[in-house]
Length: 347
Figure 1 (spheres, rainbow, N blue to C red):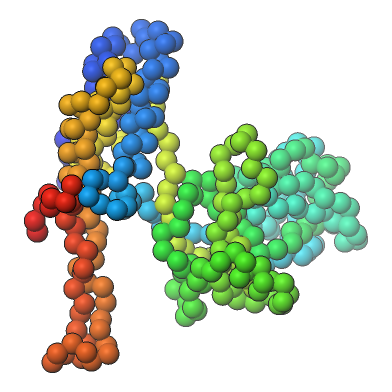
Figure 2: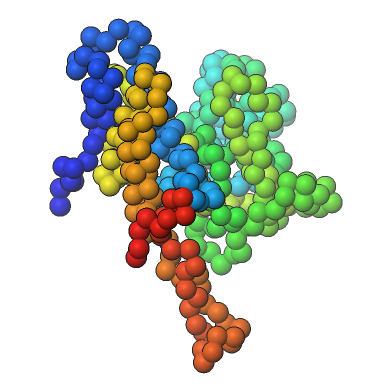
């Protein structure tokens, strides 16, 4: 079946916002002030839609199911110099390898070079800034060793960089991605993991983790996050978990035509948010467009809850339910949305 023609693209939403703002229909004729205003408008609209306000009568903001994707992270053990596993530097920030596998979770770590013939330590190559592919690295500065091929090493210290689009955990566990019969890794406090690492220096299968901000934030780039894991891994463990996704705003005026996240059923929310942002940004008022945006938000939240929330919480096996020993526990929080104490939908 073809995609629905009811969907709105980023260009559609930008054009509707432009019409509401009484901008020319041809974005190529916009002045620099109009371009700047539209950038502010679409960013404001997307922040409001992606991270919605707490609806009146509710206690927490809604977290969209389509901003909670499953991702993976590799918790790797220390890599020691091996003659058959090498890197090559060329005097720039680029590093290529042969026989190596690099992971994004290595970002922020120092890579060390050893003579490929003798195995003697040469020195630190640099700090890993990016991992474009599994066989290439980008350093934060030009390589600090001569152009050559080296054996290499990276020391695992229990910290692993999370994806740049990460803004939060969904749930409290990391699950093994390969389906092997191993226990999930459970979230604990940072102090508990630090204590674990202090009193047990042995490597092993990770049992607990904490999420913490990467140290050294200066404002030059967005805040990044990392996992602190204990014990330090004795092997490479590929873990999966749902996370809260940090997303970019739609392009304001460059003509790029892309689809909005979540699917066509949520495009009315984005359209209403854009018109509301025009009303607020240009006309400095909270009126009809704001009311329409809240109505669209309520409908979108209800749809998301109705189609993603479970219908049960699990099984009651303690025998307390009358006449049943394995009864299913009904979902206590249904998809209904309340505004000012009034139920908006009835299932």
